[in-house]
Image 1 (cartoon, rainbow, N blue to C red):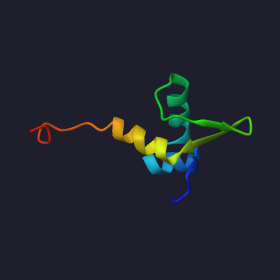
Image 2: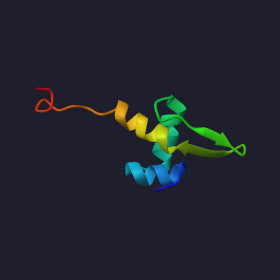
Image 3: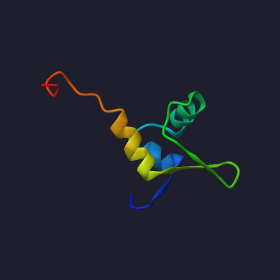
Image 4: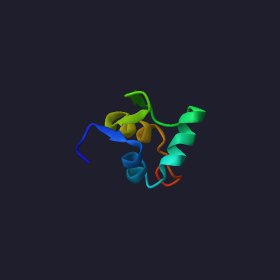
Length: 65
């Protein structure tokens, strides 16, 4: 995916989840930042997705040393 702005479906495919799960994250304020374009269209900036994933990395015990 070389585009900067992605749809919820594209992000769901990237994260191996569903657009519905992303919608639930948005409603709870826990998901990656979104852009509301053209009233109902939700877009994600690829840079925000990458940053969000980086913040949610969890190190295993083996990696901590």
